[in-house]
Length: 102
Image (cartoon, rainbow, N blue to C red; front, side, top):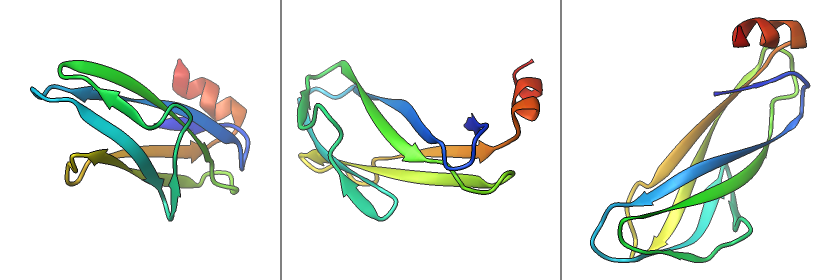
């Protein structure tokens, strides 16, 4: 979960993809919300037993107190069904965010 202190703030986050299989997998693209996107660095081939950090930028909600749950679908070759990550962002005032971190 990401806590945002400014409405409509652009959030950058990283998802670590891990290939624990015996064969390489090509990461070809992603779908974040309703739009397809190809983050910088894609396509990339993930060798067997390796990891890759995939970075995204998403816009937070525009109302204080709002929460957004963003699903990111990751496309691969060969296809891996239901490969998704969820990112939750919540807009709070800076004082509430500081309290949450303590």
